[in-house]
Image (cartoon, rainbow, N blue to C red; front, top):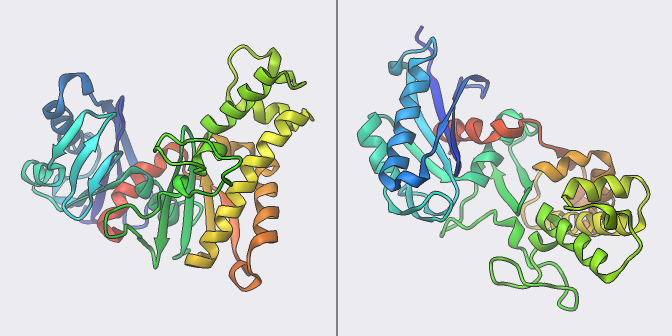
Amino acid sequence: MSEKIYVGVDVGGTTVKVGICDAEGQLLHTFEGSTEVNKGQDAVLHNIAKYARMIVEESPYAWEQVDGVGVGIAGFLDIPRGYVKYSANLGLRDADLKGYLEQELQKTIKVNNDANVAALGEAWAGAGRGVDHCVCYTLGTGVGGGIIIDGRIVEGFASMAGELGHIAIVPDLEAIQCGCGKMGCLETVSSATGIIRMAKDAVERGDRTTLAEVDEIMAKDVMDAAKAGDEVANRIISRAAFYLGKSMSMMAIALNPKCFIVGGGVSKAGDFLFDQIREVFEKYTLDQAKEGVTIVPATLGNNAGVVGAAGLILRG
């Protein structure tokens, strides 16, 4: 076999997921191993390199076919240098990840933010396949994001482009403080955490809602209650959708993407959520900026990170 393959590494706080992709972004083989954060920074770096080699050894492919290794990782990065300034979940500080992996693996190495990498995965081989201009949202504990223009990740001069969850979009009178320290971020209302917070606030106020009967409210509980006609839950989901749609309207004017891709747990609500987002986007977006634009769910799920990391070699 002589075809080139691309190794993608998605580094999480508990596990490191590794994948092999071909030049079209097709995922050929996957592997997961423990991150072992408790053993310290050296162990985490060692495991990333070890698993990158291990997945090829366990596959039908040869190490000589590997054209490069891409890594997606959470934290504050110096992306061009592949340097991890600080990653709280991984216990990494001042880590020359790119330099270490180049020495250990003797391959081309590219490192990027995990949200950017997931966005690239969807754009390359998922819901955005064949689309060169797209903006991706990930609705989970926070709101992650990634911007793909001309098929490549937009990073910005300080590697901060695509931090969509920290668009200050909620008016001051309604705003609360975000985990980042600023007020009114999109993340405070449109993430799973934000939805849960709004639901708990409603219950504590004594609002009439079936959510008062739920011991530990999760975002899915709020979504299910809204679908069942609970007015309080419906108001919460509509608020989350409103600010998502309005942020997309802003992105449409600034970037003019062809497609908005929404992933993460909250996005599994389907058309109940997406129809509301589309309605807001339609209302607030200039005609010329919304013509032909689609808002669609992500398709790669948990594989977006490894596929996008592999894609860094070709499109990073």
